[in-house]
Length: 257
View 1 (cartoon, rainbow, N blue to C red):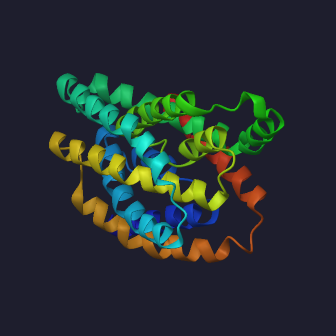
View 2: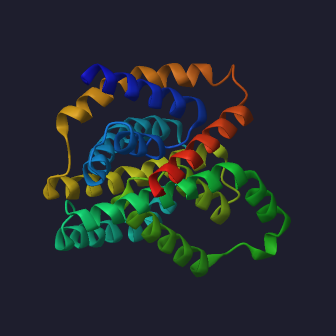
């Protein structure tokens, strides 16, 4: 079974490297549907996985100067308290009982569908923002909207492990359309590090992290992400994102059905 997990980690890493979409959108449903891992354990293990991989990514983006730390601070102001509250709620209601497992399952499916929307309509959303500069938020309204977006993402990520990647990047594009693609990616990864770390620590406290599973996934994902990043130049991005969107839509349907 460990070889299968390593190969799964490699496959997810390959897709993430080629598309840039967060691994949680792929890894958590894969663990739940294909391997029968309990939803809460799949979420907790994927959060620990994300916190480690995104830390390395943040160091790279910081060295390149592509992190907007003011925006990171605003997102964290909403995301981190929301993650703590969501963790306490899971502890209060019991993350491992059947009812909460069902809620987590539907949360994962909903987050996957939001990721599909973000993948398919991100360019249209960005085009609308650029055509209507008068609708763009400024000053305190922009700060408040960023903190609120962080709170929503913090809740989603803690419950489902999904949201920090494609959904977070899409919200950043909508709120800060003047940021370059590299700054969007760097800022999105940087704020996700403390968020996924806190959420992962919470799931460790709840006993919903499988450490052996985490190690085997990392063994496969590191070379997968590296190879996928190189292959991304040779494969059309539109084709990849279309295939990924259809795959995720099927995953969400399977989880709900």
